[in-house]
Image (cartoon, rainbow, N blue to C red; front, side, top):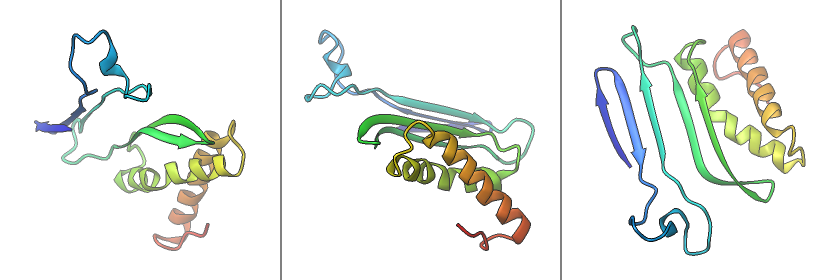
Length: 130
């Protein structure tokens, strides 16, 4: 993973791996699993601090099947909101998959994290239930 910063922006890149010229084999692991690189860029715009957050799980298992999970929290609710969601969303989506709700897992994760955030801002930080 390489990372660099420039004038308030942050760039990160992870190479897909493997050498070129091998007939496409660099895109697959020895077991035939596809692999790819992940890159991200953020720009703080006119603010002196970054409110956006991102989440990246390029290889994860949900519901017994391989998946990739990526999320961008835009920060319009402030840095605290974006960080709150970043730190909980994947766990909540995973829990919904474990309950057998594969089709509604993503929507359920967003619904659950929104309810948790709403409770936090109405009762105070560190006091959310559930």
